[in-house]
Every structure is written in structure tokens, then in C-alpha cells.
Length: 454
Image 1 (cartoon, rainbow, N blue to C red):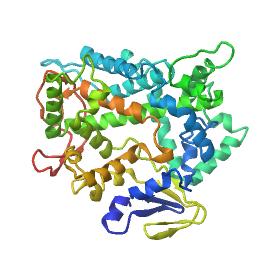
Image 2 (cartoon, rainbow, N blue to C red):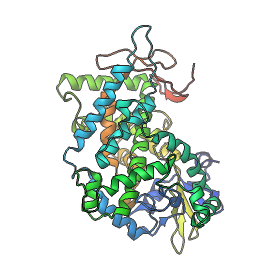
Image 3 (cartoon, one colour):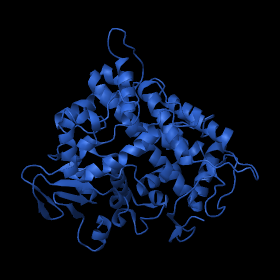
Image 4 (tube, rainbow, N blue to C red):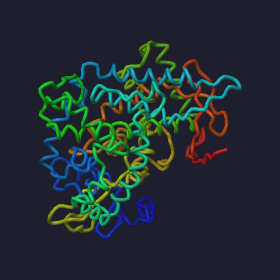
């Protein structure tokens, strides 16, 4: 039973979901577990988050001291401050995405050209992160295809990862098989593989190898920054693999969610369109592409992005932490040491006590209408989308930069959603997308309404 249902029955904010596993939707508990001085540590869940089965990265390292050392080496590169044209690189790939849509997917009259917007967005985020990370964009958007078959590989691999993350016994079996000299080569991916996730490991190994040795290449990208701050060759292989995966899938999810909710909520869409139009008329949007600073100055755009991330958080895994020696008191009850406590993203970000009675609705106005005290509470809770404290997302700056630009530049209008809800504008991109059933609010009362496929 979900934490959502448990809390609606006044059982509390902590639910037991396994023999040694709890889940919570309490933002205060989650922040306390991840704070700088917390005694909580990472649970077994993070063992499966190890993308390379032989190497830990900052995303999976269980040793807290080692984890902090990695963050120190990586933080400057992730901030973008050591990359000369950080925002310009993002701009280049946004413009490539717009160009692809205009060249191939603008419908005219009876000439209908369906476009899988979700897939194009993932092409864009992959090209952007690989360019920022190591100066070699995959080239998915120009080719309009999954060039390295990365997306297919991840879609094949992730279901197994999620199963292992939720079943401790299954993880122990996999670890035992990994340690077996005879079984390991048969079941685990290798950088020499010609298919599957091993090909990504091989790509990461090749890219990193070029940065070390007598003929090493030095580039002003994230990998170059990591190495200048002391990252070893082995560490760099693990971090490069993490960058490709975490830096593309999560951002793509955030962009998709925001766009999907906008195209199914005409009130919000029209208000955002009006804000963009007025900013253009007053020369507050640069050409050929909006700057990150200009986008941050558009309050309704920021509210739409926050709302899109809130309703469909890009990361909904448990991210469990282990209760420290001596145990702890959670929701008024004693929890023994060694217990794993997970994050219920869906319930945290639809909490009516934080976001209001219409918390399940996409209503960006809530961020503009809230009292100062309520807004602080909302912002603190929404911050958990990117992790918190010593586990906060290092790639947050890049993710928000991409969101700010794409939502404005790839303006979606005249979409094929149950009916023609929207009208064209000068800034419109005519894209047709398949939209799954979603929950949105009507124009005036914001009463939840189910939108079904035709």
C-alpha cells in the first residue's frame, strides 16, 4: 500500500514496505537524513546504482568520506564555472532541436507529420551532456536517431536494476555471482562487449584514456575540470558513465513532464504564452535564444517548471538511507539501527499540507499566490527533487539551464491532444504528440479532470 493511502488514513508519514525497509513522505525526515552532520549513511540500494559493476561513482559510493572526496573533485566542473562557453554549448543544442522540428515535423494542412517529442527531447539532453561532459556530442539530434543505441540499452537495463534495488536478497545473489571468477564474465557487462551496457562502459573507458598518459588531451570540459581537481583515471571512468546516464535521462524527464502538463492545461499554457510574448515585445528575450538569466526572470515560466518537476519528479527511486547506530525516532516511533528508510517522491511532492488541497493538479499559480511562509515550505520540499545536503544533485545547474531554454524555445502549440485546445502563435512549433491519460484541472475551478486517449 502506498504512503499516500496510509497517510490519508492518518496512520502517519512512515510506512513499512519490507522486513527491514521503511518509506517516508515527511520532508523534514528526508532533509535530516541527508544533512551535512547526519549520521545516516547510504543503504544497500546504492550498490545497484553502481552503473559500472566494478567501479563506484559519486552516485553510488557508500563510504561517506570517499563520497565527500569525490564531490570535492567534481563540484567545480558541474557548476559550469570552469567551462568557458557553458551556456553557449546548451544554446547550440537547443537550436539544433528547434531546427530538427522545423525541418521535419511542422505539419501543414493535411500534411500531418507526427513527432515523438519525448524521444527528441532525450536526443537533445544526450547531445548536451556529452558535449558539456567530454566535448564529444553523440549527435542524436542532427541524425534524428539513437546513434549509439544508448536509449535502447538503458530501457533494456533499468527494469532489472529497479527489481534488484527493491529486493535485497536478489542483490546479494547478484553480488555473489559477480565475485565468482567463472560466472562473472558470463553475466556482467564488460567494456569489450559489442552490445548492451558494456558498449557504454567501453565508450567511457576510451574517452577517459585519451586524457591520461604521455599523449594526453586537455580540454576545457567537465572531464578536464575533474582531472585538474585530482580525479584518477579509474574514478573518471565511473564518473563519465554516470554523467551520460544521470545527466540525460533525468533532465529529459523533467522537460517532458513540464511540456506534457502545459499542453493538457490550456489556462496555464496561455498564461505562459502571454508572459513570453510580453517579454519579447519588451526586448527581455535575446535572439536567437533566450539567456538563462532572462528565463529565470520570467516568474510564470519558473512556476511552470517547478510544477512540472513536482508532479512527475525525474527520480522516484527509494534512495534509501540506513539508520545509524543507536536507532532513531521517526514520526514518534523508535526505529532500530540498520533499518533502511526510503523516499516516497510521489507522496512528498503531492502533499496537501504543503501544496494545498489541489496538490494533484498542475497549477503553476500556487507558486505565485503562496504566502511568504508557505512559499518557503514549498521551496524546501521541492528542493528534494534534486536531492539534499551531502547528496544533492551536482548536475542541477545544467538541468535547470536546459529546462529554462527548451520550454521557451520549443514552444508547443496546436497539438493533437483529445481536442484542439490551443491556438497558433508566431512563436509556435507545430508538433503532434501522443499523450497518455493525465490528470489536469479545468480552466476556472481547477477541478481534477481525467483526459483519456481518443
